Amino acid sequence: MWKSRLFGATAAPTRPFIPDGVRVYAIGDVHGRADLLDQLLVRIDEDLKEHPIANAIHIFLGDYIDRGPDSAGVLDRLIRRGQTHQTLCLKGNHEIYLLEFLENPSILGIWGQYGALTTLLSYGLKPSLKADLGEQTELAATLSQTIPHSHVQFLTGLPVSFTCGDYFFVHAGVHPNAPLANQREDDLLWIRDDFLCHEEPFEKVIVHGHTPVREPDVRANRINIDTGAYATGRLTCLKLERDEIGFI
Ligand SMILES: [Mn+2]
Image 1 (cartoon, rainbow, N blue to C red):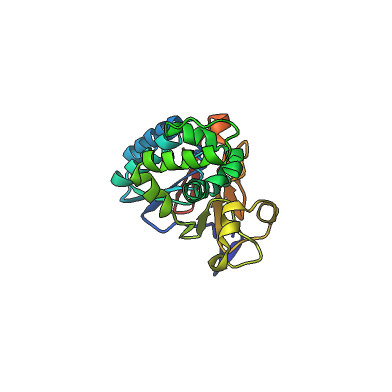
Image 2: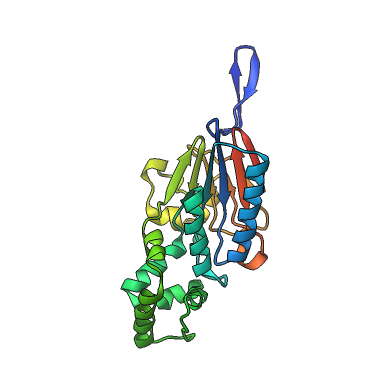
């Protein structure tokens, strides 16, 4: 990807490229931190004002809910932002649980280990720490009555990946043994070691979240922008334009 390619006598570096006239703001795992999302959207607005461009797209990498305090508020903001800006919200592994819970309340036994309680609290529910099946069923019934229809619609329609220029955006990563066009959804939403330890180039540079890192991790074959916002207070936004890679 970063290797030089010879054009006649001059060596021109070929760096991953975003098509002309397009700018991508890619945002890592928000996990219920509506406060950080608000601050970040202000920074993006300032950047757009300072550096106007016709075609700017926000790409959110999934895991909007759980762990942090205001999952419902995060979904409100993502839906609202999509009404005034070009946004693309990808699916994270956490988003699957909420929808599954409405159909199958006993999944709370598993979802609870992934930070579900804060999500239920953000919708005004009062779950106990160890809910039995009866309470799980009641909670699911209450949630399906209180959750705005727009939130369910939003969660139902999330795509799992997006390609722009030389970049491939996805929540967790890709399996190195399969072409990008033929990945299992399970890998795209959950993969860790097989992907993270792979040092060879992929077909595109993979921009992903899912596995928290202290600093954004920019490598030749992938860029990890999950800086564990819910715990660290740091929500990362990667800015891509032409062959430039930056952060705001
Ligand atoms: Mn995740």
